[in-house]
Amino acid sequence: MEELGFGDYVKELKVVDDESRAQVSFQMRFELMLQRTEKKREKKSKTSKSPEELKAAQEALFAKARLKTGISKSELVEQDEQDEEEEDIDNDESLDDANDSIQDD
Image (cartoon, rainbow, N blue to C red; front, side):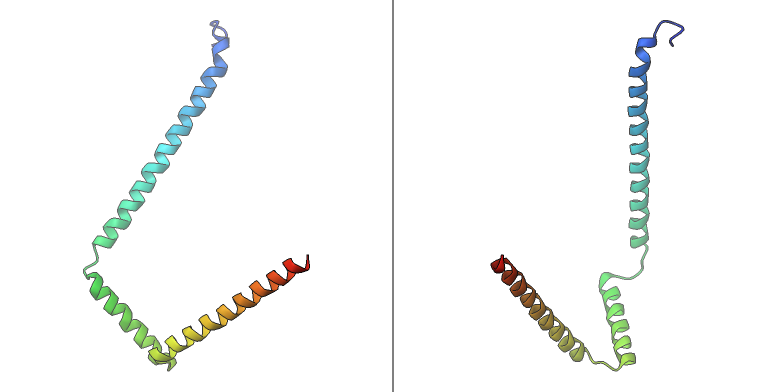
């Protein structure tokens, strides 16, 4: 380009080239994302079970796991409630500590 007398345009052409490459790169990534999304959608639609059947199967697996561990569903619920209470107590203590340190300053 410079030999032909267009050296002033080289810098501008490089900028346009870089922008063009960035746009192509973006389009390729976008198309790849669309393809992946479509594959996931197709995979989900190929299942032969309804959402209700899938939920029932999941519940059956949970029940089987509870039987293996010897823990009933009510015991799990009770343990979850205890864990939440302990978490609340810990959070309250943390807030108290933070308030105390603020007052000390």
